[in-house]
Image (cartoon, rainbow, N blue to C red):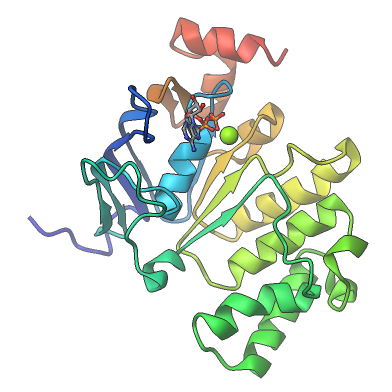
Length: 261
Ligand code: ADP
Ligand code: MG
């Protein structure tokens, strides 16, 4: 049966299996879930449970060994047994731009200004018109409250400002799905809020997102669905975040949430 693209989930992950080279165990094992268009999935779980690997696999930064990943009903990647050693997945650069990712470490190019960082991929990879891209970059900078820093260098910015620029750099490619891997984890506490507020604004604007975070109050506020991962498996999934955080179904989820009290 072919799926109607209009009805398909923005992101769908089916029976995903991931193993690293020289490891005898799967880091992700039979992971399946969907994120409908405009919705926010928050992934939580203890350190080492496979959260970063899951996002990296979805973004095409890691090959997968089983299952598949689809965008709007179109399969963009299928697991290949024996692909453990490949550096990245075999995805085309056009497909790559359809999923954006922001990381914990500020990965701006140090030798480019704020504007240069944001404009690089749309101009160089997609060959878009420079003047038009610049106008859009400035609109994005306004949206995250940093229009006055467009000519600054990364080293002149605070961690919170750099993460907001990293978000702009992802947004300018109009990703169908945006992935966030603990993007406030390395920030000083006073800068966490300004970054979380940008993400809440994106959720309100209907951006489809998958967010890995240890900020449980934020998770509760922004999630449409919460998923607990442990040892590469989904332990619990709940489309009522309030219920997940107050009355989770599994003992494992109760234990996990207690560590944040
Ligand atoms: P999390 O983000 O939830 O802390 P990770 O996805 O980083 O978890 O890691 C999941 C498991 O995979 C851990 O056991 C980790 O040691 C292992 N792992 C992560 N990256 C690699 C790698 N490049 N090579 C081998 N093992 C890895
Ligand atoms: Mg991680």
